[in-house]
Length: 304
Length: 328
Image (tube, rainbow over all chains, first blue to last red; front, side, top):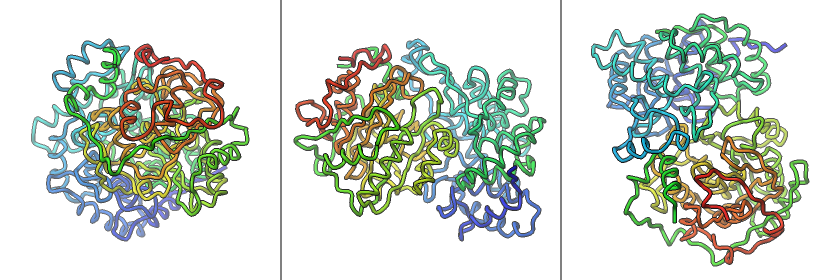
């Protein structure tokens, strides 16, 4: 039987760190915000002394990447701030560092909205029957991957999570308004039978299927809305989504999600180990970090 | 001429952007950089199944089309977007393996497989579920996730959208030979998805998100043309038409056996040939008609058909009602 030990994953993360302090999507790639944030929260959860220097260097890289407007860009050398601002806020908040930067990030996030239809688009959308288009409410306001584009499930879920964690420190009614709007968008985009994919539940009259990793992230963002039908349905459906090909990414997120929702993730640990033995998670930083967090049951950074 | 229904369907697919995007603007292109040949050759090769000797078939096609390979860094760009065990969504691993083997036998300096899945950013799942991961490992071929590849800003060589420029992955930009390897499918927004539409996968999700929504807002048809006109040459297409998809493609349609591989250097010519194999009029497909103005050959009389005849392989692929006007 395969086993997966936290020290091995910690060592892999430390070995993957770039000389500039950040992490790339896989070892050897230029540092990016998303990979660095996941590596940081995973290493912070570790009590091993060897990880502390690594963590500090990563934090310095992350703090230096913040844009003047408060957001963080994702791609190496990338220009404008993006959805990863939410992740950066979570990683810094988890580390208890860069409070001013976190709050500037929150302000950037509150100003960020998914693109909305223009008047002509609204008219056409309303006129076309639902079986000839996608099923969604275009008036709901969430968060996009990139400024100026449409709102989708994952960036909205990460933004919700970051704002919910920080809500007590953000002295503006805008926070609650955006949280309610974001939740409505997630509920609107839920797939029939439970769960979420990137954000289209039905297109041209055909139901689309959910993805476990996206479902888990959305459920974590909705942890304080456990009574909502979409939350309950997705939570019940999540284990079924993890088929025999489930990846380190989806198993890691699902285990963290189950733990946040008070369910036992332990039955999935052997599968996570088996998957690592078979694929090595393709050496992806994000999956390695999430697996480490899942193994250690480290969910503080996700709890609101 | 587009029907009203098709116009609406296409507009909605593109986030309705055609209604506000390039209305009234005449597209242009860099005629010095992008010029179509007087004639193009396309090979339609028999390949009854995935257990067929595909490497030999591809070697025959590459030689028929006189494609220089020796010493080149070859990037194979398959179509890997979702996984459905019942469907025919992705380029089959056997075709990718055969292509890697063929280019190596022809002394390519390096062969890599690169894709930036447009719906799911879970590469490990897609590679495992599709069966591609063991194939890559057996061959020792490197896989590059284009969604997270380093990027460079590139000015687009045509203006069928108002995008102006895109950040594109260096793995693709620095390739000596880019090989688009789509699955032959109908597409519920664009009509068909073939070697040109497959290039949406090179647009990095790390910059543009999932799905590649910036392209939808800019207009799907225009984006297909602008990306295809901009990516570096030389390039080559190998279309997996062994088991295609009809109906509500590119994800939820039904598999349909066609039993061919379609190869060529001219993407619009390859895609037009594939459309004809599906009994679809390529000139009625908006992006193919646009591409035919400057990027490649679409008219049948400008395409030299090698291998099997179209008549012997043509099948009546089902399309959604909104695309019925494309059928011949």
